[in-house]
Image 1 (cartoon, rainbow, N blue to C red):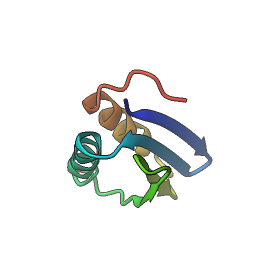
Image 2 (cartoon, rainbow, N blue to C red; image 1 turned 90 degrees about the vertical axis):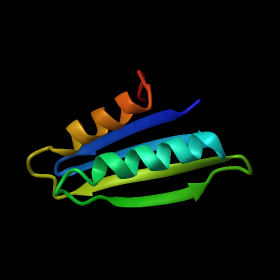
Image 3 (cartoon, helix red, strand yellow; image 1 turned 180 degrees about the vertical axis):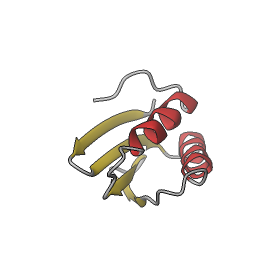
Length: 86
């Protein structure tokens, strides 16, 4: 199961996706890459291990004046069949 967490402040947005290694990791990384590359707005992306079998990808947008990140995050979550975000 992929867990999602969203945070936003003025001109800053972050989506964190926690996943198990293996198939989930491949699905998350492929989906994120394919969607964010469709937009001119560039993201800072970090991937870290949480435990031995869980990792997290953090996608951050800074200086997002037009709030474009929200649309990008929605498309990522929809493509990954995530219907709940903390």
